[in-house]
Length: 119
Image 1 (cartoon, helix red, strand yellow):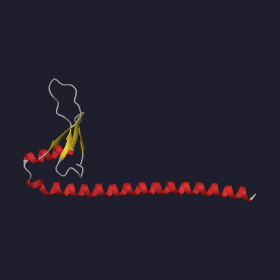
Image 2 (tube, rainbow, N blue to C red; image 1 turned 135 degrees about the vertical axis):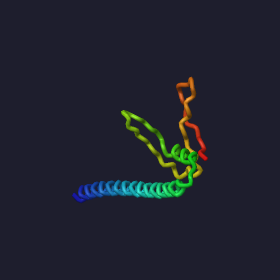
Image 3 (cartoon, one colour; image 1 turned 90 degrees about the vertical axis):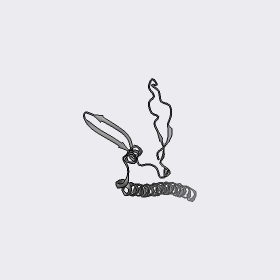
Image 4 (cartoon, rainbow, N blue to C red; image 1 turned 180 degrees about the vertical axis):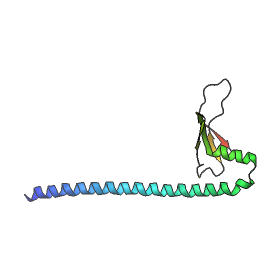
């Protein structure tokens, strides 16, 4: 009888341990996600400060480059414009980004992305 009880107790403890390990893994994932979210928020604040600090002194061409950097796509449907934006990644401090190739007259296919340096 003692062996059966011991086996039952071990199975119960093993299940509890697996549950606790899963909880730990979930918490670790949430911790990493929160850290990443904080880093993104810091980058977003920094980007916004850089942009707003220079808006008044930007030339038309510089403002145009900024818009090209942050606007991903513009669609107009039934007279309503929808603008999809993006904030450049922190690693693109030099404003290097991947950009869809310009359409070439007579070509219907576009392959890949090419890097474009915005100055």
